[in-house]
Each structure stands twice: as structure tokens, then as C-alpha cells.
Length: 330
Image (tube, rainbow, N blue to C red; front, top):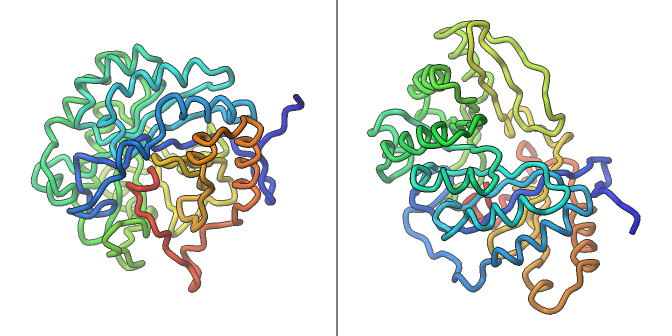
């Protein structure tokens, strides 16, 4: 069979697949989830074997990196078994995990042994009061213990993701930066996006990456831009001369849609070509009704072909997706 990469109408080659394994979470972060919600029944979630089949077909079309997300992926039982399945697939070069870290201390060793390449941990505050205010549940000590365990078992690439929200997170910026410099973590600040379940997002609540950078340079020191290692990466990375890296993911003020190289698979088995897509492709239905691998590859083609040039947050005609972040996959 002739290899055909997944290329959209704008020439973007897709090499990254974000896979949500659950919509459940043990926190209720205000920028993501409502305080009260109903989760998908377990039988509606893709099995590990179904996910592995999707990855195998995707790898044959040029997907090389996998990110496991949620919800909170570590609440999915035996996640290391999925990591082991996916890392064994020919063509996959990296399997990473995005987690809130609450259950990381007890699972870090198994994940490392299964072949997990990298960990991205969400952490918005280093103070219990601030952590609980944003996450709307306690758990800071668990997250810090999880990060320490990840270092101890040998994870060398650990990123910290912090969401920036005006009026809420300004006081957290410098402490997080100093902590990550001390611990050797790669910190990334992410602008607040219109994907919160309670629909409280507004443009004036976005604390821009440029503003965060100015605070860091004023309080810690000048930042020097780094050359991107991956042309498809969403972050613009900087380094302090005396050590430490920080990145800015600015989907609202500086969209990076022109270099987007990713597709998404929701926990209930729907392909999406953008976080802000209003259309989905039913992978689960195809898998559970005898669909062939060729049909699955054709569905990927359809999804990629329908991808827009940009998400259009800044447009007056922008329409929020029906699903919130935890239902899509971060």
C-alpha cells in the first residue's frame, strides 16, 4: 500500500494524535469543568484495544506522536496497559501524558516501565488556597508528590502547564516560574480559552502571554527566544540566561493554527480536527459495526479535509463548540 500522509487543504501535515481516555476528573477546574456534571457511561468509552487499533491505522498514515489526555487520564484503570499497547505500534515515536498529577505518585513507576515518554502536569498554584480556588478541590500536596515521584523514576521531560486568567492567576506567575527553574521543569503558560463548561469565558478575562512574559522579565530577568525543536509545537519557548525555560501558548492573542499538526479522538470515540470544531466523525460506530481499517483511514481523511484554516476565536461569527474541554480532551 502506498503511504499517504494526512494533509489538509492548507498543506498542514498531521503527525500528532491527542487521545482522551475518559471525561472523568477528580478536580473541577473553573476553566474546564462544572462543579456538577454527568459523565459518559463506561460502555460508551473506547476500549484500550479499540484505541490501539485507531493508533495503528493512524501510524500507517504518518501519525508519530500520541498524547493521552482526559478528563484526568489517570482515573482510567490500568492506564499503563494502554501505554504499553500504543508504544509497541510501529511508527509511534513518542507517547506523552497530560495529567493533573493527583494520582501520579502511585502510577509514575508503572507508566515509566510501560514506555511513557513525557509528562505534562497541570499546576496553576503552589499555595493550597490558590490551588483550591482554581481547581475547586484540594490536592496540591498530591500533585507535588506526583512530580517528585516522576523525577525519581526517571522521567527527564516534565512540563508544567498553567492557565492564565485575569483577576485570578497573576499572583501565581512568579512563584511557579521560580519553582520550575529550581526543579528543572519546563513551564508553559496557556491563555484561557472559550472551552469552560460554565461559559464564563470572555476576552477581557484572558491574561495574554505577552503580559505574563512582561511580569516574568520584570521580576526574574530577561528572556531569550529559543528556536522551535518541533515546527508544529503550539508554544513559543524562551530561556533565562542563568537557567530555566518557559513557554507561552497563546491561542487567543497569537493563534498558531497555521502550523497545527494534530487530530483529536474523544473518549467516546469521535474524531475532531480542532479543539473548537463543531463537527465530529463517529469512530466508535465504525469500529463496533464491522468497519475496516481502510474505512477508518478514509474517515481520518474526511476529518482532515474538513479542517478550517483557523479556529476563529477572534471572529464575530465564532461559535463555541457544544462540548467543554474535559469532554473533548486537553
